[in-house]
Amino acid sequence: MSTTDDTVPGTGTPRDPVTDAAERLHEAHRTGVPCAPVRDLLPPGDLEAAYAVQSLLTERRLALGRRVTGWKIGLTSTAVQRQLGVEAPDFGALLDDTAVPDGAEVPWGSVLQPRAEAEVALVLEGDLVHERHTVADVIRATAFVLPAIEVVGSRIRDWDISAVDTVADNASSGAYVLGTRPVLLRDLDLRSAGMVLERRGEPVSTGAGVACLGNPLHAAVWLADTLVRLGSPLRAGDTVLTGALGPMAAVGPGDVFEARIDGLGSVRAAFGRTDTEGALR
Image (tube, rainbow, N blue to C red; front, side):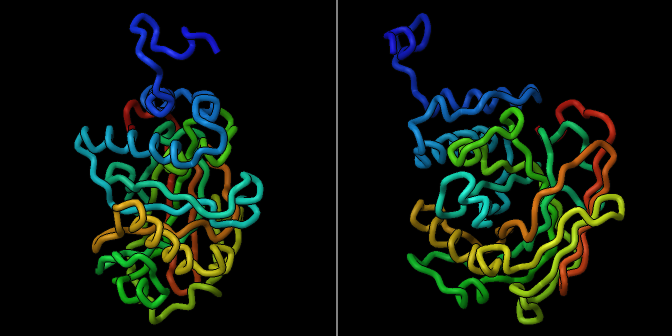
């Protein structure tokens, strides 16, 4: 590669691949125009660099007054892990401006290339700060459980993603909708809980808790351990989206989705028909 390619034009300053990747994703987020993948900017397969991009983008949002409300877990399906060449889930930050009330409208264009997933959300009342957690630790720290619809989206054109791309892009996080009837974990069997996701009354995705690393609680244990290693443990008040219970469903303008999860009830996400300038951006 030439010297020109390795430096910032007009400065002679060496390029920082993490900064370059973050800038590409930021511009896609700001303009609403999906970008090329960022894997060409980062070392091949370097998830550490991808998480550094994610962190930099989150810091930008926090500097604008946003707030981290919790975390989402992705790649909890073994089939998807094989597809992307990884052996573990990934995670991204949930921000307050991406939370949408149950049944409220998600403005069209606010999430790029949106798709919908039904998930189990844990809301914590205790910190998870051990080096290694058990399922019992997660159960003890959980205040209640809610049904959720995650609206995943990709700033990367045509969802042309590798593991590095989705991690850098905040685990393809877009928006999330929580149900409003809290349920105690002791009243649930999350492993066997069945899920149906409907679009305009027609089923488009089905599944169960077992599809999420065998049990959504297992995914939460993985996240708790991972965040402790990174120095940002789960804290009381955090919401954890534990991962999809079934396949993603495509979203179009005007669509209305309803997810029903056994023992948890239902949650709805409605999408606008026209773009709204600046919404959720």
